Length: 286
View: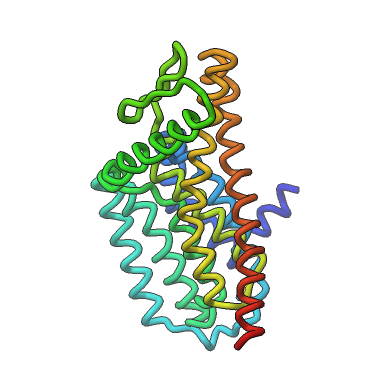
């Protein structure tokens, strides 16, 4: 087994993988022990695994493109920009630049050896990598505040309309004798970012042909993620009200995160079906 792995490592692909891990391995480790360890951006490792799977699925298409299609000059420029972004991000502790350098480095390597045809083959995995890059803290702070306030307001109004004794003060919900703070992980930008990635992955797997339909679904994923966040907050409030604070902050708090994705997936499937019916009728009339 060890001899086989050593032989694989000496192949061009094996050397490329080892080089990639040597460059970005420390980046992954830093992310895993800091940003990805938080509830807000814990989706990072999952996005990375999905990107590896998507690239693996396209390996035969890449291999079928001859090396004569390579664009050494353009590839070198992209690769050099990636190295520059990596060095700046690594030396100045800018996680966004350090992790984002992956896109330029990978694009540069593919263009260097396989040209723009190869870049077209991996365009979705390359784009999907964006979702594993830690968002700038200033952007997260600026957007998350209004999002949490909106989610808190809608969730409290919905529960009050159902007859529950819910009051709101900013992003703090009071239900009975309990108070719940709507955290960034429950209703922030990162949560919406993750659900957008889920929706785009679904679109890539089902592979709809119509550009207009794909664009409509991509746009509608934003309100879908907003609704899913509201459902998550409502579940936590209801669990806390009926079973106590320990239940709301214990297992059910993590389980509510799973409910978030299940609700979002069901809504995405439902909206996709409605879009299918709408576009079929539109095509039949035109």
